[in-house]
Image 1 (cartoon, rainbow, N blue to C red):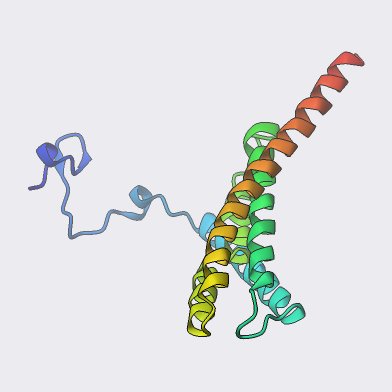
Image 2 (image 1 turned 45 degrees about the vertical axis):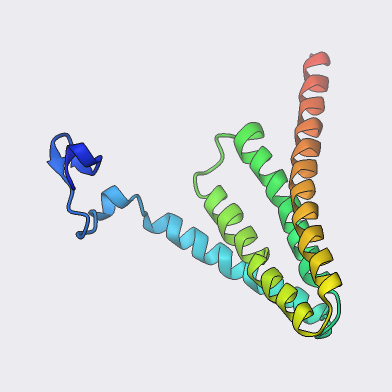
Length: 166
């Protein structure tokens, strides 16, 4: 079923064809955003790759490098989101796609996290695999929350002190 009764419309009273892609303007994809995400993703992935070269983990070792990358990346995401949504909401519209989606999306690596868990299991280390699975999730969530809270607190304190000196 298509048309207004199904919720699929291209405008008031115009039934949508679910098999025909929407025009680019309706898809919301803009070349500058795509370029920012792509460039940022390449930089973030290169940084992650470099970290893996600097601090390699053995095939049956606990994946400390990936763990550290994910926790650090989540902390930076917490800082970035507070900065661009609360401290400087007027930041350039490409800051979030470039840094948040691109650089930090390319830097953090939850796909490698899943591969690391499987690798540990394949090497007969289900205990460390389970610990890594839980610790990464917990540390990433705590990291983003703590970094956001610390950034918010720092900028709230800074704003209060600048108001009191006026």
